Amino acid sequence: MLTAREKAMGLIHVTTTLRAREKARKKYAAEFLVDTGATDSLAPAKELKRAGIKPRGRMAYELADGRTVEYDFGLAEIEFMGELTSGRVIFGPDNAEPLLGVTALESVGILVDPTTRTLKRMPAIPLK
Image (cartoon, rainbow, N blue to C red):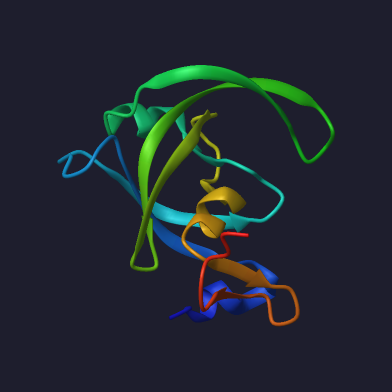
């Protein structure tokens, strides 16, 4: 269920927990901004390291302002809205707002309804 904050101003935030692996005791939990313009999710590097998530590679990413920057990424278990997936998480600047990317959303069958600006569950995840 979405909170009033998640519906306000067209911005959607969702409580998300990141872990290095299944049943890891260390974790990072925060309100993540749902960002349909981002493929991968992003969190502050210091928080990912504290949660035991390790860098596994480096990629170039294009920012909203058009600049290209390189960031480390790791692999994490991603849990939100009662759903569980795993995927790439970018080691962002330590002051970065956490972002939940479209890959994590789509992998569990959740889309952003552009008309109502809310999160909606698909009845089934397409395999076609």
